[in-house]
Amino acid sequence: MISAAATLTAFSPEHLEAATRLSQQAGWPHRREDWQVALTVSKGCVAVAADGRVIGTVLMTPYGGDAGTINMVIVDECERGQGLGRRLMLEALTLAGDRRLQLVATADGLPLYEKLGFRRTGEIVQHQGHLRLPIARTERVRAAAHDDLGAVTALDAAAFGADRRGLIVRLAAIGEVAVLEREGRIAGFATLRRFGRGFVIGPVVAPALDDAQALIAHFLAGREGDFIRLDTGTETRLAPWLAGLGLADVGGGIVMRRPVTGAAIPPTAMSFALASQAFG
Image (cartoon, rainbow, N blue to C red; front, side, top):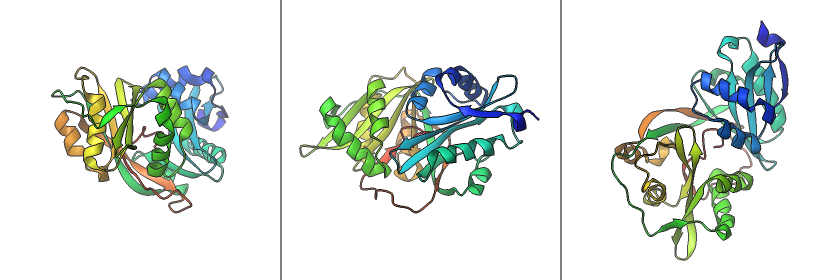
């Protein structure tokens, strides 16, 4: 039983290639570069077999000292069913300390997470594909300037319920940020970056559905040949519009939190798309 004898060690850049192979085995689209971004803003560990193979991974992405997400939980397909996933999760919980935690679960992972105190709080739907028709930008949305990042991070905190300044700054550094202006102030934003087979749009924060659509359209314009992904909550009502554009519903995941109640910043803005299922 290799899993029982596996050693858990801190996730470091030397593990990126092996982690990428594990995610490919699981059918995930992550490139090495995507793992690198996740590791840059996260802490984690890997399970290493006696022969030196990495057979499991987990990351915990902290948002200050109060909140975080658990993500990239993968166990080698030959080592599943032997308790390694639980060992990895317990290590992630140790790294998280007293933080409020969120994760996006598959149906297979749901029983383990429930045993560890996580409870279902929502559902995420993944839309992806190529645009069917050209789409135009609107004058309400423009590319963000460096001076806009303060307002952007404040809006993100208002929507997510925790300060994710480090994540937002990182996404701005590797991708693009667009903002929506209303009455002389920034009322919404969206980001776009390379990910997997093409590009991912998110997070998207906006006052209303049509504003979210305008922000998304800013990044879709001129990208008819690009593969686009966007993860949205079922409550946002974005799904019919996205499907009509050619971004098909390909499934999703279950949003889980621990604890369900806590001292989160009360949401005062609407999140229409996640940064990713890993980051929330």
